[in-house]
Image (cartoon, rainbow, N blue to C red; front, top):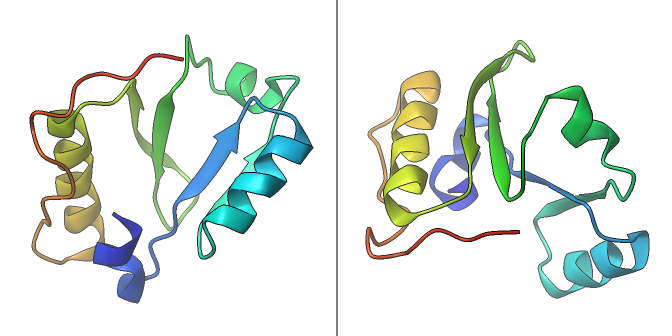
Length: 104
């Protein structure tokens, strides 16, 4: 999704409950993506996230536009459509709809 909308300033920030060491390894393996370690789950608690994985769509003003709990191809494509609306671009399909839910 970041590739589809980056020219409009869209950024994906991955907040993970893992240790800083695990997050640093993932960041090294996936350059260009931003990872934040949150092992105490402070960010998760601040936003009232019931479980992970969850995704927040935050607009340019810092307001949470939507929250997606768990992921599926359909939910990722719906989020892509929401991003497209915010950045005024055509929606990009970012995942096959056969992608099933992930649990964490």
